[in-house]
Length: 337
Image (cartoon, rainbow, N blue to C red; front, side, top):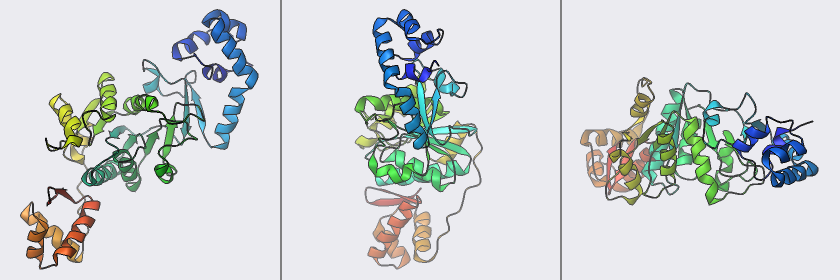
């Protein structure tokens, strides 16, 4: 019986050639006539090796669903790409939320960017927004974790085969979320594959938020794909002197929406922000936070003086507040987020 998956797994067959071939009976003779003798020989080899059957069996053992470009279940947002994936490998489900945000940024994220991203993703998830990212270290991982903390949907798009999950540090995180890849099983992570991953993030999202990115960050590739697809691009501003914020600042200069917090993202998505949650703090932690709210910005010594707490304890409490996404450090000074 003709098998489109066998053709999709044949070297040299992309979406355009696949579309041409699907008009035939998919016999080796028809493929050779339609796509040329070289592709015809490669297709025969794929059939002889039973590659499609093996791929299905391996995917089934891993709990994966294969969705071909020829199937009705294939997502329309990807079908309209210039070079859509011919086969998708899915664990879990595709985005089904009314609105979805792609959140991307540098792998070497600063502590404030990680804390800020995690908090905003958590709040977006609680507001019913799906979070899509690339499962990389830094900003990506923080976005996924925040969405999970908020009890929401999050999808990680891979730049490798589903059995070659990268980076390995995020394996435990990946087990808790939905995953998607366009690459056959066994495909190792390669630098050239990540831009292809990025276009899927941009296509599935309603808008893309760049949290922290240098001038040559891969996150800017995602932003460019989003612009080309007509998606809104949002960016978090940083200090002009910070190399890790130059990409975001440049995006804002070029017209990206400036984001200061969750409400800005929700507004960009056409959603109403829910009532803000008040932080539940007690004891010395509450003392330090209240003092910082009154001062707007302060050095740890200022807060120690205002609260009559030892400076070492104030520093520890500020670290906890920063992890909770309630304060932000800049140049040794702290301010409420």
